[in-house]
Length: 292
Image (tube, rainbow, N blue to C red; front, side):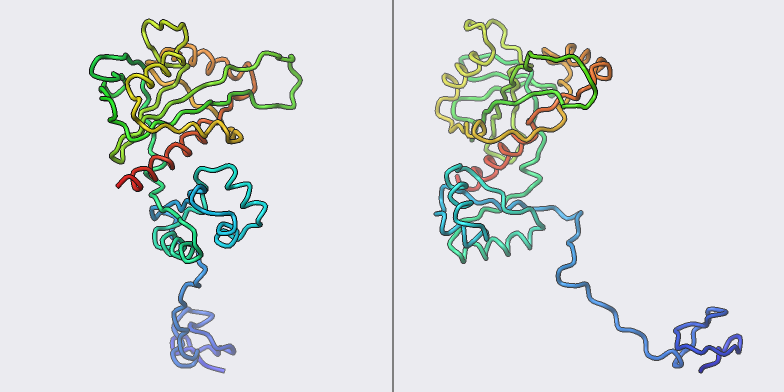
C-alpha cells in the first residue's frame, strides 16, 4: 500500500497517479511502461499515395502465376486465356515494390504504376472534325489537334447501360437502353486521356449517318499508326451509378431532363464507365513505361 504525497490518502493498488486527486505517485507505482512499437501488420497510412501492382498475363505461364499469385492452376489457366493486365494489389509504394520483387523472384513479370495516374479524370471531348493536319477536338477547356501518330495508345470499348432493379411494382419495360461506346486517346506524357462518348459527341456532317461509324473512320484515317486496344469488350460488366452528361454536350439538355425526372421514374441509371476508365488508365500507365 502507498500513500499519495499530495493528499495523503492511502492507495491500495499500484498506480501511476492518485485515484482521488490525480497527483503522480512516483516510485510507488513502479517503472513507467516502455513505449510500444506498432505491430508489423499494422495498416499503413491511408493518406499516402498508393501504387498499383499489375501482371501482364501475356508474359507469364499458368504455372508461374500459380506460384506467384497463390492461386490454383485452373484459375491461372482462366487468367491467361482472358489475357491483358491483372491487378494484384494496391498498396503504399514501399509495400508494392517489395512484393513486386518477391513476384519477380518467382518468375513473374509485375509492373508497378501510380494509382493517381491510372485514375486521372479524363478530359471530355464534345465535338471534333477530321482535318488535313490531324484530328481536331473541342473540350470544355479548349481545343487541340492530334497529328498522326501523336497519341501513345487508343483504347475503345462498349459501355453497358441499364436501370437498377427495384422491388417496387412498375410497368414492364421491354425496350433496352442503347449501349454506349467510349474512346480514350492517351498521350505520351502522364496526362488525363481525351475521352470521346459516341452518344454525346458532335461530328458535324456524318456521311455514314452514324457517329460511331464516323469516329471509326476518323481513327482509321487520322491515327492509323497508333496502337489500339479493344479488349474491354471481353470483360464482364461491373455496373455503378451513371454520371450526368457533361455540360455543353449534345445530350446535356436530355441529361438534365432525365435527372429531373429520375425521382418520378424511380430506378437509377447504371453503367460500367468507371470500369472502362480504370481498365484504360492501367493500359496507358503500363504503355508509358514499357515504351521507354
